[in-house]
View 1: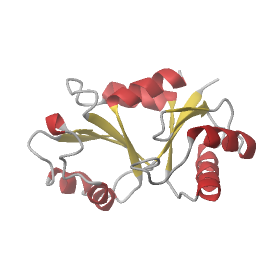
View 2: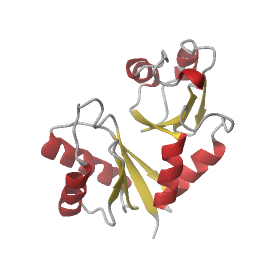
View 3: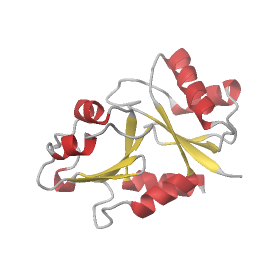
Length: 177
C-alpha cells in the first residue's frame, strides 16, 4: 500500500484557524474515503493511504475542515515518492534542518515568480524551485527575520502553497514509508 500526506496551510497558528488533530482524524475517517489516517503535530500534516483520486481527496478534506471547523485552508497532496524525490533534490543540503523549508505548491508558480522573490532575499537567504516545491534556506535569521512573508510569497507565486521545515519533511517521509 502506498502512502501520502495531505498538508494543510496555516492551521493552529498563534491561536487562529484551530483544527484539533484528534477531532480531524475522527471526522475524516467518518466523512471521507481516506484510509489509515494519522496526523503529525498540530500544524496540519495528515498521513494516509494514497487516495485513488488525490484531487477529490483534497477537495473533500478542505470541505470537511470548512464545515466542521469553520476554517478554509488549501490542502496540498504529496505521495511518499514525491516527498522522497523532493527531499533528495533539495538544493541546500548543508543548510540547518530548521531553517531550510520546502513550500509545497498546488501547481507551477507564475512566470517571473522566482525573480520577484529573489529581489526580496536577505543576504543569507537562498531559494530554488524543484518541480512544484519552492525550497527556501532562510539562513541564520530564520523565518522570523525574512522579507518573504506569506503575502509576498502568495502575490509572487500566484498559487497556494504550504511550507514545512526539513526536519518535519524528513519525519513525514518516515511516517509515509
